[in-house]
Amino acid sequence: MSATELAARAGLPTQRPARIRHRVGVLLCPEVSLGSYGLALDVFRMANQIAGPYRFDLVRVGVGGSAVDHGDGLLAVDAGLESLGGLALVVIPSLWTQGAEAVARHPAVADALAALPPSVLVVSMCTGGYFLAAAGRLDGRPVTTHWALAEDMQRQFPHLSIDPAPNLIVDGGQICSGGSLAGIDACLQAVQQMTDRATARELARMLVVDMQRGNQLAFMPAQGWRRHGDRDVRALRRAGFVIVGKLATSELGALPVTEPDIHPPTRNPWDPTRTAGGSSGGSAAAVAA
Image (cartoon, rainbow, N blue to C red):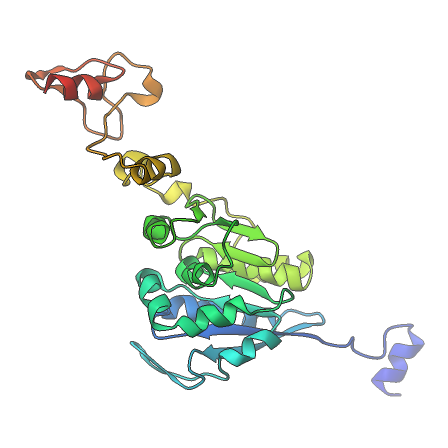
């Protein structure tokens, strides 16, 4: 008796469920971070090892349709930008610090992304969001990127509202991730949207990551160590104000001295052995100086 007959007698399915296939394009250009590019490919290749009906057909999309001369070697591609409209998902790997250069060198990428039909899901990993911004696909939407590169992206696209804190932002058919390995979160979210939560959870187990990993705040330096580029300060600068410095205060303005744990103490400029007081010791020292 054949295995099919035995299964039928036992009341078990005698046919495998039909495969549900999704075509996933991963964008490749000379500025792409090879680690981010390889990460995207590996996540979906690993997803193909999970039992179930879902399978992902990977398409390596080159900006010119031919092999890409990357700093780490000649990289093969399967198709050009004309293929993007026929995909279920487009993944834009990190451009690391070359986001602005990539946008300037490859305007056809922004054009192709702008022309995508609404049915195509889009993932930007880290600074891959530069291409989405250039395509106008981030206008009026919440945006994140690597916390260390958010200020540069904000300068390039001042009309956007970029928040470096979130690890992941899902807004309709677009998924933006924060820095580096946050790209895994973005790809997991895309898998969940194209399949189901059970499949995404199993993939997360295989990747040895949590489905939700918080935000980037734990990895960001204290606000005082970052350049002042928040929304209100940008508005002041656009109005013509000149920012000449930052003034220190104690944590929550609650202490009689200005000696926070994460910054050097503010001293009296007339006698550095004495405190400048608090809570606004930085203001007092600036006036006294």
